[in-house]
Length: 338
Image 1 (tube, rainbow, N blue to C red):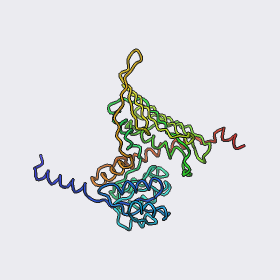
Image 2 (spheres, rainbow, N blue to C red):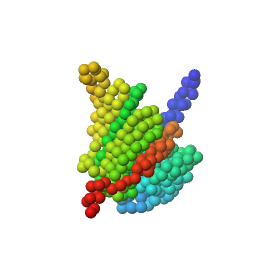
Image 3 (tube, rainbow, N blue to C red):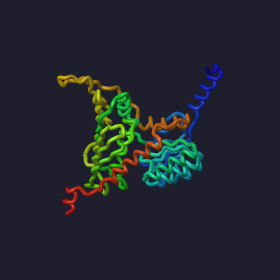
Image 4 (cartoon, one colour):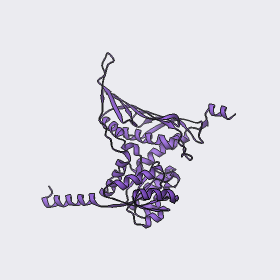
């Protein structure tokens, strides 16, 4: 057993780690990057050094609001001596920016998807491992309190099936990806996380109607543990909907990720009746929790909440969905074009 002086020394070390200021910058000041800046500026133990974006008007405006500097690119940000960065730039530049930041010794949180290709994702993971820096990926839905409540309710359960719906109107900002990479990759990650199992079978059905890329996706999966899963996603619904249904041998869980209401049905009886209870769900902002977990991993040196390896595995499944089905124009879209 450790002596009292040693225990006190350990306690003081932990306290020092908790208080250590992390100098951090944000790369990419779109909608997500602006939110990163807002949250980081409010977190204790953080010095938000600067925001980096080629659009200096956008970066300057947000920087003024949060009270930090603004630079034109990530190299200028690294020259300021940051400990860590969050990367919210477009996906196609994640790889090059992440490698530069890792080479400079900065800890990195990169928004999902980790990269444009699986090969690029593996390259980022390998670089972070060689350099010994923390690499975390921003699958922010993991930190939704409703999702955390589902995960807790599934502890010790024998999961049978998962059905996830993630639909909404077409986002004008989207141009270089379709619904699989923009939306379904969230739920691919959740399926792997809920089941603690790899996805081994993929059956995708994709179509495009209004967008240049697929805007409808019906995706079916089987995990190595035998769980059947289904994702329904599109950009055609005039309102947002985010629901999760999970069937286990003992209960059925229903969750609305937008209203954060989670219920479970249990105690099935021969007459068809059953009991229902509403599960407690927190109110924390998912992005705030995510960024706090990133900072915790930096300070402790422990494994981050969403590892690069996990993010690459989810990206690989998403790309298999795209490659496993030829995306054709929906018949209604073809008729409209004539």
